[in-house]
Image (cartoon, rainbow, N blue to C red):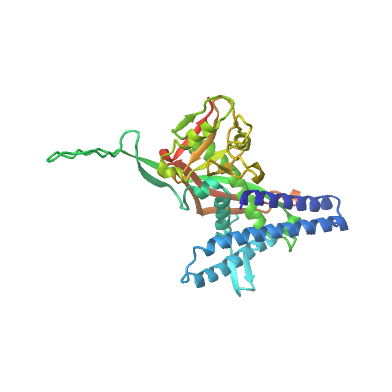
Length: 385
């Protein structure tokens, strides 16, 4: 299931709802009959998408829950739902203490001196959504830890364990392996979004899920660029040392894709995925032989799936397009790329006053992130000539 596109569609529908309410607010009137019908239709479609996402998430979790864990999970789920209701109440009323009828308990959201409310359930759902929708994170060597995380890896550029024949009474020569450290830092990133008070005050609107998806989507968009192109803080996949050069500067061939895939050792190749710009993928899909037959999908009546050479393809607008010397594709077993997002350090801050004159509430989210290549042999980049 393409969670990213589904969430993008959902947020587009919510924006339409927001605009309907905003127009009515500006004209100081209630929604007319046509607007009300449209709002309700949009609301139903959003609810259907939410249900689909929730069922998909529950389906994944069911596969990993044992019988011993089931009762605890049920209690944990009830408390999580209570915390979400408390968070929704805080958005609407500003109150951090909420008397939950279903669990018959008072739920207190921790509030710091800076007015930050930090609901663990909300933070965990944001991290889960980010990981589920962003393929690099989902397939990477992922860690949810706070602070620095250090890996000790063998530096194959300066040493390598070897094997050789030995004769009788001949000494086995040892090789000295050199190691290097790779550190995942606690780089803090923040996202700010605002939500219409009209939506917040609409009792039938799932404001909690809206906040989670808005914050998660902004983090995903940011991370997708960082973890591909890299920056002073994060190492991107396109910064991998293993590079294959295409045969031309402006066109790709099937041979170029095969060379890229075979740059990865056989034992990792079967777990690899392609990452490229949508325009690059379209160019690959159109490759033909001299007879005009499609090279990568001869039976065009079945449609072109999201695969190349038998492996999945992930599209990203943050990947460079085909141009001279541009790095246009990655083929990687993403377990060679370590990522970190800290749920423990995640923070959601509600800004009640910042956008008060716009009849809106600000939502600021902060998380610790990092990404580093820990196994260069699992990652290869295709650059144009």
